[in-house]
Image (cartoon, rainbow, N blue to C red; front, side, top):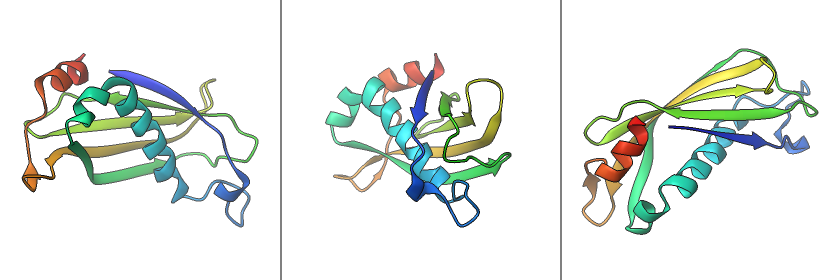
Length: 128
């Protein structure tokens, strides 16, 4: 499964050096991830199942400036029993890659207070 999202760079995203602050990249990842969940897993989310980030990393390759175009591609890897990995490519849509990132997500049932299996419908979508 793969989804692309264009992100608008705001002046508030910049640091003293005039490029996007490294911590803001994780907000961009969250924006792309939420879009993926809303578009493809709204029914599952309506059941109360939560998707928690348990690991996140980012490899910064090029700075992003205020006037740069930013597109984030999110692609899933084959899910495990209760977790799945999302890989991100932050780029300008024309071959310039700003960063590559990864989050490990777990399915969490807050009413039971524990991790649960990835729902079958979601597993099939993530594998596709």
